[in-house]
Length: 247
Ligand SMILES: [Zn+2]
Ligand SMILES: [Zn+2]
Image (cartoon, rainbow, N blue to C red; front, side, top):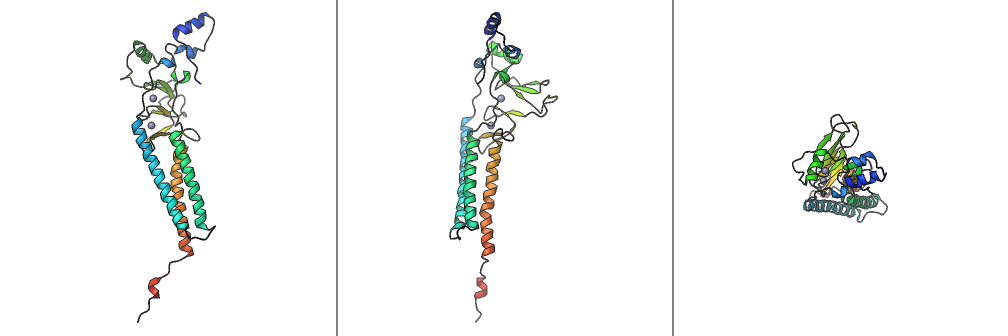
């Protein structure tokens, strides 16, 4: 849970009562997190239509591959290659459905507002907020020394490993997605098929789910083809033309 940052008046009152906060908290105490402007609204219609496309594509591929494998397995001897393929294709379908749920419902790595990400508020942003002015027209602010950038839409500091002179060259790249309207760490791309930012590395983010879905499509294709090849090898086609007799 994020800690609440005291306002300047509250901070002064706390000081006078002898209650001390960390300097990093007091630096940005001019505006509390709850008083920051609301986060921009994601393009929900676009996200929804893209998600529906992704669900449809995965469902159709599952139906196609399961149907084909089922068709090959009909009439095949039990416990043969066809039956093994059938077990595999259902497992692959289950894994793909699980990965799809993870991709659609999981967090890609959104940078949340917290005392660590919100403070200190850059002076130019703070001045506009205190005057009640819009932040439209402001560009993201780069802190070369600490290798981070301040997103003027999410109002958060985010690591920027790619910035010149970054002190954290190995840190993740962040990007503000125009569709999801959030800053995401380890951003790869916004997927127009699944309607989600694809981001993360290793166990972080949702890249693992994305790769899993792609892998399952490849595995399912092989699972479909393998029993067909086995059947062709086992039962070579009868040359009908050679059986005809010449009168
Ligand atoms: Zn942002
Ligand atoms: Zn996105």
